[in-house]
Image (cartoon, rainbow over all chains, first blue to last red; front, side, top):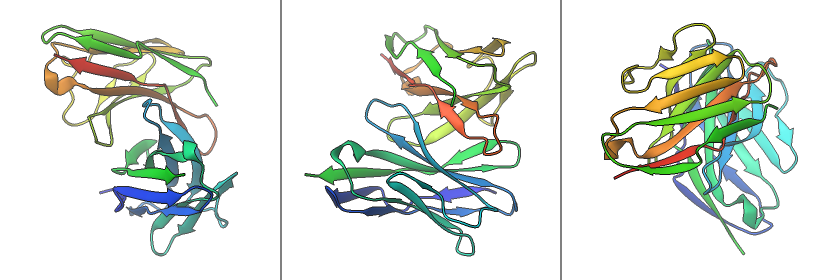
Length: 113
Length: 115
């Protein structure tokens, strides 16, 4: 069975500091995709970053980077230079065969001024 | 990325009534998805809506409770039928990107409260 685990229910970070949100996954499929989404209090799900299982390099998108360690089955999100607007829920998700997405339980990030 | 319009954005409904949520995409897409997010929980896939065929429901979700329509490649509706307070959730539609990454993009969600 496919599974995504986010072990940090809540995280705090000082403004302008970097923060790492943890995500581990479990799948026997060789081909899969890993995603991070941000959900502000408004409820919308905002796509942040993608990492394919065959990608050799870690994905980066602006202040977001994905620390992909395939052997350890981890796909941690790193947010650099945190801003107050980064306060939100963050969900890790995995796409596996058949375009099905499986979401983790989320991490609530609070940026402290 | 696709632009997805979902409405209503929120509603308060009485138990026993039904609510239809609409999802409009600015481009033609093959697959549309409907999710439920109960308070404080993660997203759970309700069903996959394919144009021209019956929706495919996940375990625990049935067509009588969550009928879905997909009349064309840019539009879908989800109805929450015979509502109870346990149906109070955020309902989100999403579409799959056509690219190799198959990113799912989401609408803004419908925040439903059932009294």
